[in-house]
Image (cartoon, rainbow, N blue to C red; front, side, top):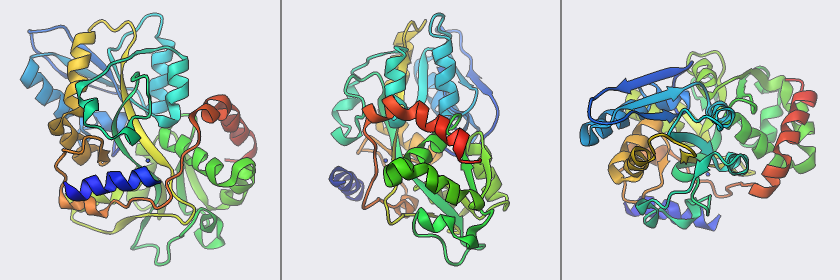
Length: 343
């Protein structure tokens, strides 16, 4: 606990794991109206936190729950926006601090002052209106396979070196929140020259996948020794595979912070059940499930963490762009990337 609180204090001075395709997971009872939850694919996977959260929640409350996972966080946000005149979901899990401005602008969520917010550090409450509530956090990071690379890169610029030709797997910012995070990371470091960086980086990129799950799968299957992922990714391999083969890199320029959010969909058919599920997600019990299955840092400081989380680094220079700047320019940054990066 003391170590975790120290990590949060360090954050003040200075931001999922395996699946693919759309999934629907249900736990059925006869006691209550069904709760429909939109989430990203790795959250709903059999090794993600979704199934355990649903089973535990249903056992406690008797409420039937369905997880609907059409893709990555950007994809599910777009789906909820398309359905906003006729909402089909009750709860939205996945939009992060980088998608906040778009989420609020579309008016698809209702605010909720969850009781657990009183325990969550102020630095992690990225939406002061409480439409999106934080449920986990970490940093985007380049991970490498130590059995394939002896001298890993130490900076974004290092990634452009010839020794890493066709070695890196990235994600598309149009469909993936890590993909968007990496684009914003390059923007935070290089400013208006970010596209020049991408042109230098092109030779190092083996593939740009639609989702994090697909990209990380290429990495763990040995297709590439470098992948865009999270500062916490090595924790998974330590916990479940008892290996320290895969490592995350704290870069000289800093790493970009991600805080993932959850919100109640406006016009939800079952808002009371949505609030109950959200409360469970933010409880120490729910947070432990999320941390150890989603492999991200919990937002509730009273969460028990296994020793494997010692492998997750805390950036000495966490990077963030201003949310208004993101809101005003994100679409043009992405479009320019599509037209000029060559990827």
